[in-house]
Image (tube, rainbow, N blue to C red):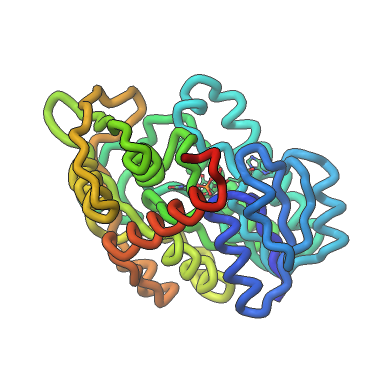
Length: 315
Ligand SMILES: NC(=O)c1ccc[n+]([C@@H]2O[C@H](COP(=O)([O-])OP(=O)(O)OC[C@H]3O[C@@H](n4cnc5c(N)ncnc54)[C@H](O)[C@@H]3O)[C@@H](O)[C@H]2O)c1
């Protein structure tokens, strides 16, 4: 099969690309390298450095004629979305529409659309949050991801473009950017490895809790969605909540460090608690996460250690 991965130079998209190539698919990457890295690009994939909002995207799709488009490119910085909702909407809504219009013109069979289980539900009224949980995003990012899901429904009904929506929980693993806004695992590993003090942001009435899913498991869900999960919206997480303190504890255990954290105040737009029900992904994709937090952290820490050895500037 031929698959075009948008955002294929990014943290998650690049792992998806690696896996699809290993499975024998032909892969094309479209990425503007705004947060993605050239170093993440798999040389086995043809690469187009391009903004998904660029009109020329239609020509790329026409030339490449992929069977499936796996749409990972996004503005995914929640804080930036709150500060600049216009930018967020341009990339996540207008960019998506440009992708979908190009898909229709090139007769793409299916789009895998990456949404966010951590953002669309808002502060959950029940846990774990299932796909039928009310949608009450409290950030522009959560809103634009949900709007994207609704556009997919429209394109399926009217243009017969099939889709699967994957609502990711908090994804962690090798290649996650420790300098970014997201990615508490990468941030903790980066700080602790340098002997620096991490900060735990919390609410007056308690700790934040998140669902941490390993990137390798997320990749499996994408591989399954190439042929399954037609017209479905599916949570991709672990079904388990981990407090940020417990996460820090687990990271310290992995690295063999013992550094007392600072405590800070949670920012506006941050949820207190979220973890996702995942039975539907099992039913429709035959998917379950296989990597537990301990194994996933170990693999992630190993990758950061190797990176630091190969790049002395990160010491
Ligand atoms: N990391 C998580 O925990 C998480 C959780 C839920 C959903 N997601 C979603 O997963 C996807 C991938 O996120 P990630 O964590 O790998 O982040 P990332 O920033 O590493 O990847 C995003 C990629 O998209 C590219 N990109 C951004 N804007 C673009 C544009 N206008 N045109 C072309 N390319 C563009 C970036 O250069 C980057 O390579 C995003 O859609 C994000 O919203 C991530």
